[in-house]
Image (cartoon, rainbow, N blue to C red; front, side, top):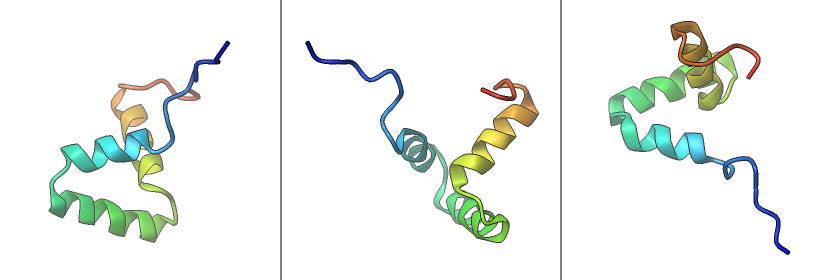
Length: 58
């Protein structure tokens, strides 16, 4: 019996970000990512928490 993966595949958030953000905005996210020394997904997750779309600690 095959197990089903309970978590989304690696990179799913990154693919979604790339498909829904303009090139200029993506470039700005990359610059901010380098400046903060954090991945883009961390920046997006933090923004979702701050805007109330995601609970902290999830």
